Image (cartoon, rainbow, N blue to C red; front, side):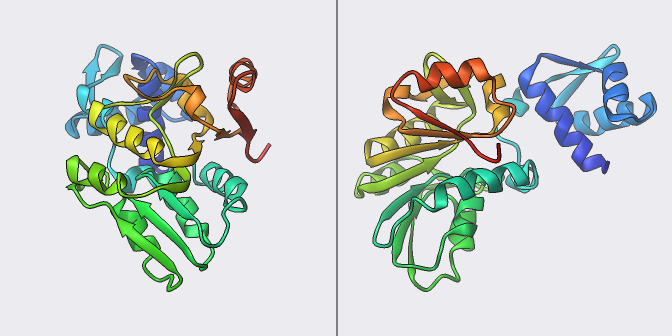
Length: 254
């Protein structure tokens, strides 16, 4: 396992629990404790973790999205499975909303070159679709956050307000079985709320790891979500609870 991949797995673990321990990580990744200590030291130097006796805890920086280039290489097969599960729903002539998630960028890469309009707050998706002559791409504009390649703020929200989406695709920070889906910041949650208000059909694209995270800011209740697409590993009890309401749940790649 490459160090970068191991670092991402350690950070994912810290997003779901309060602390990681050197001995546990050493056993899980089948590497020496010295290797794990070096990993944690590098993550500490990056400001993402704080060292403790025998392990590490997450810093505040980890609760914000990690750089896009890091997230874009994680769980690619799962993201492709999710994207493949929904791309067939899209019809020529439709107006689509795509958020700045890496899963939506994978979906954008799979979109056919047909007469559709894509409205997005993702600079990465704009680049992905730039070579599709039949796809009309609208960037929301706004304040660009370079690490996440996402536009936000009042300009982005105003642009979204000018459209009606046939379908909206977005991901989230975490899933609450009772309350819905949420984000790590109020600003990001508010932008997604504007997108949901503009959409006829709403899809949440979220792999199974999102069930382990408690979202800080709610952006959609289950009554606002038509379809949740997740991956194997999602808790069966949670799937059944969500499916008992208005939201259809698809497990992609099962």
